[in-house]
Amino acid sequence: MKRTITLILIFTLAFFGLSYFGWKSFEKKADIQRTETYNQNVREKINQLLVDRQIPEVGQGDALVLNVWATWCGPCIGEISELNLIAKEYKDAPVRFLAFSNETMQVWEVFQNRRPEFRFDYELLFEADEIISFLSSLDLENNGHSIPIHLLINSDGTLEKVITGASEATILQIRSFLEPINQKTASIE
Image (cartoon, rainbow, N blue to C red; front, side, top):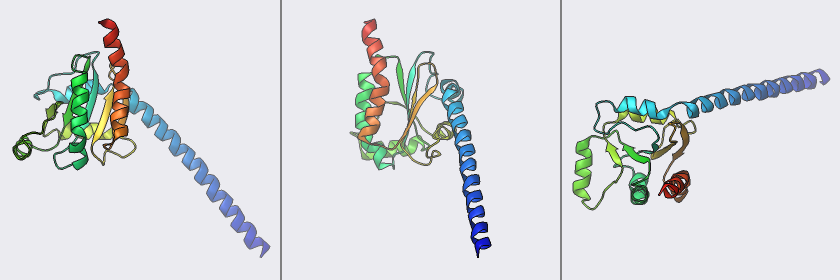
């Protein structure tokens, strides 16, 4: 009986020990992946993917607020009026607002015909599967499996933050990201 309890105890300690060190190794790999993801030049990759598309290349020094959305996504549609206000507020700042959908332009036109009062003031690109795939790969928390996704890109081209979902907290995070840009713009004037 003592031997059985001793063996169970040894196996339990070994299991938890290996699990702990295995988890630490996993955490370390995740930290390395996060660092690599956040240090890459996202602007360069976006510009490569924008070649031959209707949105012009993103210039050096421009911050980016990127959005992945769809017309069928209720939360996406629900937050757009607030996103439009932000885009209008920063229209003269060194920041670009781009939105990507994997839907066709025809789907967008049908949607607009049904809701003529609706507008989205970001630069829009449809049938953007390759760009969306890249942007989704940057969403390390949800693996790009949810929309809307917002990506905030610093003026040096590096990824500042990925935000999934539509909420007041999302809007506040976007505003917080843009505030230093607003302060720089005001001090220049």
